[in-house]
Image (tube, rainbow, N blue to C red; front, side, top):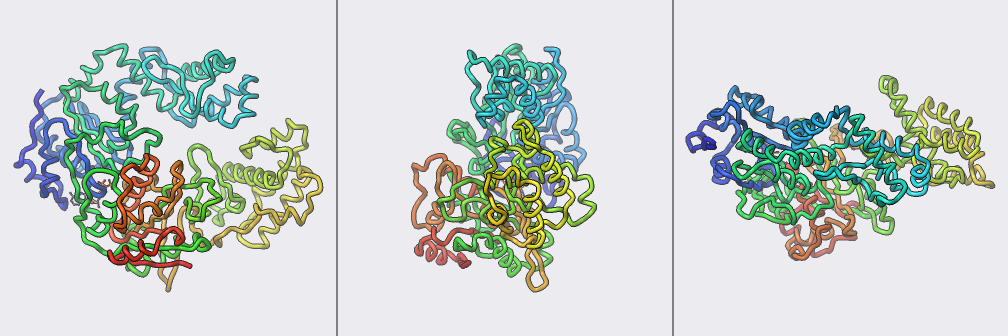
Length: 638
Ligand SMILES: Nc1ncnc2c1ncn2[C@@H]1O[C@H](COP(=O)(O)OP(=O)(O)OP(=O)(O)O)[C@@H](O)[C@H]1O
């Protein structure tokens, strides 16, 4: 089946189809004109999605089939929406948004064309496909069985394993995404198999189940592959670097050799699918087409970013240099001031008009971890102790005063009683843990507290009263007086649960009650730091590298972190490479390479100002001198 080629004449039309965008360089032209199956390995800020959307626009103008379409697959709905938005801007492009074409995530493609038909043909109606919902229901069902309940009580890994129950492969074999199943001969195995079967009948699934049902259909009906290949003679895949080995294996089974597949991605930005060995992935093919120039930043940032790449050609900067990059060295005692200091540097460099138009962010590869023997600068929590992402997996705050904070705005207080209740229960659990109460062994979640105390024959009335009191109390966290009041409240209601002989003075001195490191007014939110200087303000958003993938910032602060499992500090290893003192170890293990890829993503976000923060104890004088010679600004925070 022939697909009309895009010609140099078509490219000329891009001037009017995509005004303001520049596709005149040889690399972008080669990608736009490429027919056949190709990989496109494109640098950060090169506008991968822009080139892909331009190519689709040109296809749309001459697409000859009304029963056969173009299939565009992405990983995230953000990328899908971006492509759809660009196509919707022209009448030709808008035609690609409907039958016979498909633009969507790999998951939605698998659901629509394979998994849901397979389930329907087995008489199963889907109620919900959601990992969290599944996990909750699976655990609740499984622990009704006394053997499982007892097992889960003694082993913290059991519940996540049950929550992760999933089907794998064409034979729908039972497995778990979060742990190892018991042996089939174990008495708990049939219980888990029944839980999975029961939830399947009720239509409750995990996302990954859909891949297994897709494989099931492909094995049962081999002609599905030919059918899909006829329907979609041209396939584009965006964000290819984030494809897992399982997804890649499935994609291979979907289309036959007649289909032209073009895959866009950046091998250096592969940071989401952890655990897999990237060398097993086929992207990018040896003969990939490059787009090596970034439209985001200038040559200086480009050269810094290039030094931490793990493969491919160096990125070049097609925009202009704005400010020299900066190395900010801090002493251990000042680690919590790094973000604020960076904010001052930003205020010194940019006017208010520029600041209003764009974002300023601080990012770190690692959110939290326990490596107490190492010097600060280990995780995001060292730099910004208030940072706690309420992650989907249900991780909750470990900081007492953040949990007890009541929004000052009455509007925000109404309707949030549920989450307030969760927070005060968690706070109570933290206090009972801090006193080493003998009654809370194995309690991991504040909401289990009352039940577990009752089961243990304790009177939990006072604990319930404490929850009520804390939920309604105001201003407990913001001042010494408020915090003293909170400590007194805890003591009043909880002291019967304390170990014998604990005095009030000992209780008051517990580290759990230490005041927060930052004054609350400096914390705009858990993930924002606002700094005011000479009447001007800037807000720095704080997050992990993974949460800021794909973004463009005005200024970016990259915070050093300790890798796991490498147990090495990312910038400590990377700075001598950046400074040109030594090359990256060619035998570096995957754990180290993944840290370099995170740095690559983080350092390639800013248009105008890149700052790297590192503990002064981990940088050599030679390194500082070499960076200075390259034009880097150096600051010390001590
Ligand atoms: N062809 C182009 N001409 C002019 N500007 C462009 C072009 N392509 C992209 N840009 C601009 O360059 C910047 C970076 O683009 P974009 O974020 O799409 O790149 P990306 O390849 O997705 O980056 P990353 O992989 O780092 O997330 C944006 O400000 C975008 O508007």
